[in-house]
Image (cartoon, rainbow, N blue to C red; front, side, top):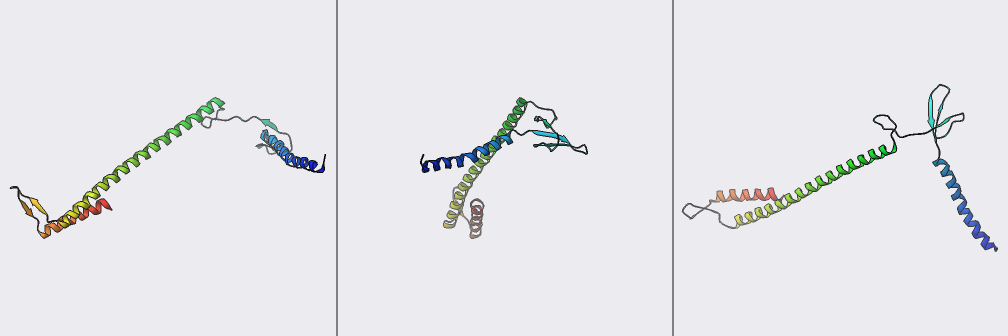
Length: 164
Protein backbone atom coordinates (compact mmCIF):
# COMPACT_ATOMS: atom_id res chain seq x y z
CA UNK A 1 0.00 0.00 0.00
CA UNK A 2 1.26 3.44 -0.82
CA UNK A 3 1.50 6.23 1.73
CA UNK A 4 -1.37 8.08 0.01
CA UNK A 5 -3.64 5.05 0.46
CA UNK A 6 -2.71 4.73 4.12
CA UNK A 7 -3.56 8.40 4.65
CA UNK A 8 -7.04 7.93 3.14
CA UNK A 9 -7.83 5.00 5.41
CA UNK A 10 -6.53 6.88 8.44
CA UNK A 11 -8.80 9.84 7.57
CA UNK A 12 -11.82 7.55 7.45
CA UNK A 13 -11.00 6.09 10.84
CA UNK A 14 -10.59 9.55 12.32
CA UNK A 15 -14.15 10.35 11.27
CA UNK A 16 -15.70 7.00 12.13
CA UNK A 17 -14.18 6.43 15.59
CA UNK A 18 -15.69 9.50 17.30
CA UNK A 19 -19.01 8.73 15.65
CA UNK A 20 -19.03 5.16 16.97
CA UNK A 21 -18.02 6.38 20.42
CA UNK A 22 -20.86 8.90 20.48
CA UNK A 23 -23.36 6.22 19.42
CA UNK A 24 -22.23 3.91 22.21
CA UNK A 25 -22.54 6.64 24.81
CA UNK A 26 -25.99 7.72 23.64
CA UNK A 27 -27.22 4.10 23.63
CA UNK A 28 -26.17 3.79 27.25
CA UNK A 29 -28.03 6.96 28.17
CA UNK A 30 -31.18 5.85 26.36
CA UNK A 31 -31.40 2.65 28.40
CA UNK A 32 -30.82 4.36 31.75
CA UNK A 33 -33.41 3.42 34.35
CA UNK A 34 -34.92 5.17 37.34
CA UNK A 35 -33.41 4.40 40.73
CA UNK A 36 -34.86 4.76 44.23
CA UNK A 37 -32.91 5.00 47.47
CA UNK A 38 -33.36 6.10 51.07
CA UNK A 39 -30.80 8.43 52.67
CA UNK A 40 -29.58 8.41 56.28
CA UNK A 41 -32.45 10.60 57.48
CA UNK A 42 -35.07 8.25 55.96
CA UNK A 43 -36.01 10.40 52.96
CA UNK A 44 -36.76 8.60 49.70
CA UNK A 45 -34.96 9.85 46.57
CA UNK A 46 -35.33 9.06 42.87
CA UNK A 47 -32.76 9.59 40.15
CA UNK A 48 -31.52 8.43 36.76
CA UNK A 49 -28.15 7.36 38.20
CA UNK A 50 -27.71 5.12 41.21
CA UNK A 51 -26.12 6.70 44.26
CA UNK A 52 -22.76 5.60 45.60
CA UNK A 53 -24.46 3.10 47.86
CA UNK A 54 -27.08 0.50 47.14
CA UNK A 55 -30.31 1.45 45.29
CA UNK A 56 -33.09 -0.50 43.68
CA UNK A 57 -34.20 0.06 40.10
CA UNK A 58 -37.92 0.83 39.73
CA UNK A 59 -40.21 0.56 36.74
CA UNK A 60 -42.06 3.78 35.92
CA UNK A 61 -45.68 3.62 34.71
CA UNK A 62 -47.80 6.50 33.39
CA UNK A 63 -50.48 7.57 35.80
CA UNK A 64 -53.87 9.06 35.24
CA UNK A 65 -53.57 12.50 36.90
CA UNK A 66 -57.27 12.65 37.78
CA UNK A 67 -57.51 9.42 39.73
CA UNK A 68 -53.87 8.62 40.51
CA UNK A 69 -54.35 5.10 39.11
CA UNK A 70 -51.84 3.45 36.82
CA UNK A 71 -53.29 3.63 33.32
CA UNK A 72 -52.64 1.14 30.59
CA UNK A 73 -51.23 2.28 27.27
CA UNK A 74 -54.49 1.83 25.32
CA UNK A 75 -56.46 4.03 27.73
CA UNK A 76 -53.76 6.72 27.70
CA UNK A 77 -53.66 6.69 23.91
CA UNK A 78 -57.46 6.84 23.72
CA UNK A 79 -57.58 9.85 26.08
CA UNK A 80 -54.84 11.58 24.09
CA UNK A 81 -56.75 11.06 20.84
CA UNK A 82 -59.99 12.29 22.41
CA UNK A 83 -58.25 15.43 23.65
CA UNK A 84 -56.72 15.94 20.20
CA UNK A 85 -60.15 15.52 18.55
CA UNK A 86 -61.75 18.06 20.92
CA UNK A 87 -58.98 20.57 20.19
CA UNK A 88 -59.35 20.04 16.43
CA UNK A 89 -63.12 20.56 16.74
CA UNK A 90 -62.53 23.73 18.74
CA UNK A 91 -60.08 25.04 16.12
CA UNK A 92 -62.57 24.20 13.35
CA UNK A 93 -65.34 26.13 15.16
CA UNK A 94 -62.98 29.07 15.61
CA UNK A 95 -62.08 29.04 11.91
CA UNK A 96 -65.78 28.93 10.96
CA UNK A 97 -66.55 31.87 13.27
CA UNK A 98 -63.68 33.88 11.75
CA UNK A 99 -64.87 33.00 8.26
CA UNK A 100 -68.42 34.15 9.07
CA UNK A 101 -67.15 37.37 10.65
CA UNK A 102 -64.98 38.05 7.59
CA UNK A 103 -67.92 37.40 5.26
CA UNK A 104 -70.16 39.70 7.31
CA UNK A 105 -67.48 42.42 7.32
CA UNK A 106 -67.11 42.10 3.55
CA UNK A 107 -70.88 42.47 3.06
CA UNK A 108 -70.91 45.54 5.32
CA UNK A 109 -68.06 47.13 3.35
CA UNK A 110 -69.92 46.53 0.11
CA UNK A 111 -73.10 48.04 1.55
CA UNK A 112 -71.20 51.08 2.85
CA UNK A 113 -69.55 51.57 -0.57
CA UNK A 114 -72.94 51.46 -2.29
CA UNK A 115 -74.48 53.92 0.13
CA UNK A 116 -71.43 56.19 -0.11
CA UNK A 117 -71.75 56.33 -3.90
CA UNK A 118 -75.46 57.10 -3.61
CA UNK A 119 -74.84 59.86 -1.01
CA UNK A 120 -72.11 61.50 -3.14
CA UNK A 121 -74.28 61.47 -6.25
CA UNK A 122 -77.19 62.99 -4.30
CA UNK A 123 -74.92 65.76 -2.94
CA UNK A 124 -73.60 66.59 -6.43
CA UNK A 125 -77.14 66.78 -7.77
CA UNK A 126 -78.31 69.02 -4.91
CA UNK A 127 -75.35 71.37 -5.37
CA UNK A 128 -75.89 71.77 -9.15
CA UNK A 129 -79.64 71.91 -9.56
CA UNK A 130 -82.57 73.84 -8.19
CA UNK A 131 -84.44 71.72 -5.66
CA UNK A 132 -88.20 71.34 -5.65
CA UNK A 133 -91.02 69.31 -4.10
CA UNK A 134 -93.90 67.88 -6.11
CA UNK A 135 -97.29 69.35 -5.27
CA UNK A 136 -100.64 67.56 -5.03
CA UNK A 137 -101.86 69.06 -8.31
CA UNK A 138 -98.81 67.68 -10.21
CA UNK A 139 -96.81 70.90 -10.17
CA UNK A 140 -93.54 71.85 -8.47
CA UNK A 141 -92.76 74.01 -5.48
CA UNK A 142 -89.14 75.20 -5.55
CA UNK A 143 -87.29 75.25 -2.21
CA UNK A 144 -86.16 78.52 -0.70
CA UNK A 145 -82.44 79.20 -0.20
CA UNK A 146 -82.69 78.22 3.50
CA UNK A 147 -84.50 74.96 2.68
CA UNK A 148 -82.01 74.18 -0.09
CA UNK A 149 -79.04 74.81 2.25
CA UNK A 150 -80.61 72.50 4.85
CA UNK A 151 -81.02 69.70 2.23
CA UNK A 152 -77.40 70.13 1.08
CA UNK A 153 -76.21 69.98 4.72
CA UNK A 154 -78.14 66.71 5.21
CA UNK A 155 -76.58 65.31 2.00
CA UNK A 156 -73.09 66.30 3.24
CA UNK A 157 -73.82 64.61 6.55
CA UNK A 158 -74.83 61.42 4.72
CA UNK A 159 -71.59 61.51 2.69
CA UNK A 160 -69.57 61.95 5.86
CA UNK A 161 -71.44 59.08 7.56
CA UNK A 162 -71.14 56.53 4.72
CA UNK A 163 -67.83 57.52 3.13
CA UNK A 164 -65.53 58.14 6.13
